[in-house]
Image (tube, rainbow, N blue to C red; front, top):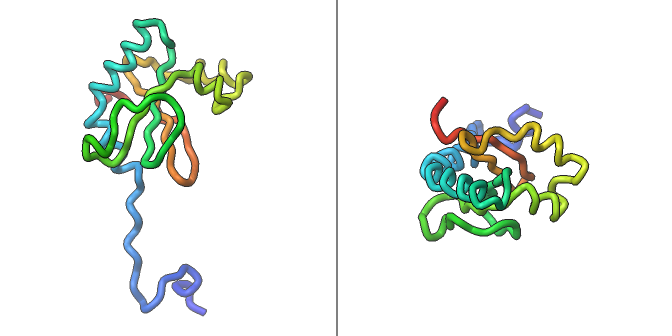
Length: 132
């Protein structure tokens, strides 16, 4: 048996590598970044939270509030806004891990905290508002 058969490639044709969804996320975050920065600062100034979190997804997520709808803006990703407090309340971040999260949280004036949700799972990413 040929290695190509084991990998599901047949007829000697190579499959093009699938583009990571993070490529389109980066494009959308660049497009959204000024708006997201304003929202993060507003959350902090109003005293709602010192730790705003944006949720980026391409499916439905029941967390936070939609602020940028991909259907309305013709983009690949929808972005919702939440806070560390809601993540702890809903058990996404365990209460005993809250201090670890806040220690690693980057300055919200300079970086957006994005909880990226994809079919394979979810993870936190800190994306700079300005190119560094």
